[in-house]
Image (cartoon, rainbow, N blue to C red):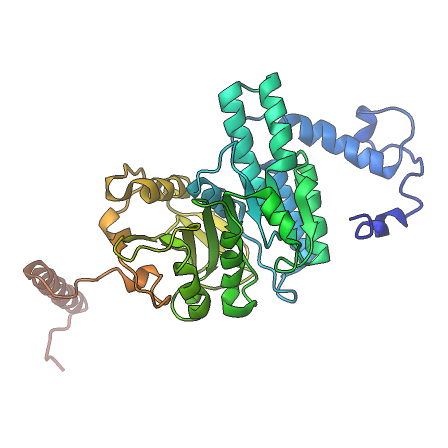
Length: 396
């Protein structure tokens, strides 16, 4: 980390005392370095305003995510596409991460998954013991030091991940730089994870599926893992890994995500696959398939827009995963259109929603009536337009 940030230390003038900016002079006296003036301004005008805010307003996360856009460029050259924070939070919630969870990410990136997991773990501890109580503070300290594990090969990403965790209150104790598949076995056996969250590099063989296969093998029996990945991995591009996984682990659910999810970095169809570790897949039990392509957001190169109540929709997906057709949803959608339970084969190539949702294409009498009504409306509209211009059909 120090090596990555060494360029900053080469600026010998950064700590020289200078005259105060007009706005900063209202906050401190005398002379101060440019660094001190900048941070003094941020502290008084931004930090003090947001530090006491409750709820899930992730100001630090938004600022760091914006910083990463400049630090990584478009990320394509090194094959890095970061998972949006609202997705990492949803995936951690789907796995029911709590204060007792032991969470690992074997393709850590900027530590987005570990951040979301840590936040849920802290919330659970504070809910159980009360905010700022001795028990809560001790539990939070323990989970930050011993219940999060990250492994990242890329040196720049490792630095950004560790920095990210430090900025969030420091859960960086177990962020390791190294090759996931060549890291000493003791790292995984000693940690004994029961939750696994992943967005592997899509450029890796079989779209990155070996990452979750490897991770599930290193987990406690009954542990839960979730991966967001190109859904071609579930329809033929990762057959070897998938077949092997089903012999040892269970596919619980498949959630189809929006095509524009990673815009503007990449436009690719992804799905989230959820697994239970060390229980061979029972092909006589159905898998939950969910269509979440309409998540309420619209993404463009200029940013993201809220179109149709995305907050409620993301909460609904968690309810739908847990309760299926019985889920009490808040957003406006038809459950039968987006949720189906169906069986998979041992082929490893039928893991996506579209392969299990049967669309009834047989026309009904209502379809016929609507088509005729639409046609007559069109004919009447044309006739009125012709009369309005003084013309009639067939008149030269």
